Image (cartoon, rainbow, N blue to C red; front, side, top):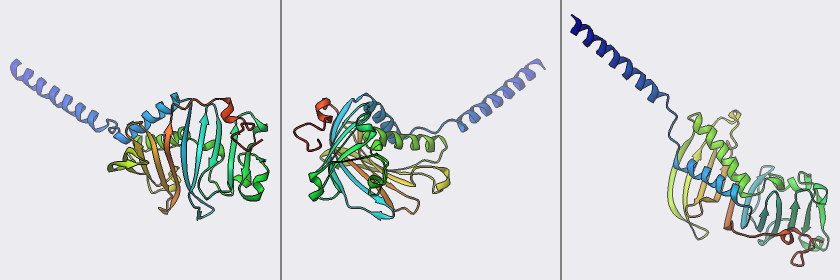
Length: 250
């Protein structure tokens, strides 16, 4: 009788433990996809980087119209200093500078054409700037872009709503690259930044190379590329001084 009770107790205990194990597995957090791990690594790399240079490629849909690609040489230094010189044929500006705390919080622009004989100061969120840009100048930079992607991916992953398509490896801008298509819920009120993104990462430097973002109509709204990014650039005050003789911003 005692042996029978002992066997029954062992059986009941094994059933309870099995149920507990199944419940534990069933409620475990989904495994982090490799692309999210790489994006989070990029966040840390860019957090450590104090300055960098890059050739910035930009295509944006503004007021329903997809604008032509702009290409510019970009200098960036923390906490927030930017210099850009347009090297492609599109874009209103020739040079731009913005330094946090300088020029009464305004950015300085030298336009193209005859207007380039003068320089103009504008607030970052002025209509003159946002008329041809989706974002103010304060949103430019690899750190902001990477953080935006990471925040949306983390939220969707935690909610079990992140869908990843692995597009494999290749090269982009002469760099070893891996591309993923990232899908968010097709439900705009959920508050994700976009419906779909195509993210290409530099697998050697572990930072983004290109990001295409699509809206809920699956139309391209933003396409950003960072070519020849140099995180070891030792930028100094002269790089963000309008009196720099290499610039025409004084």
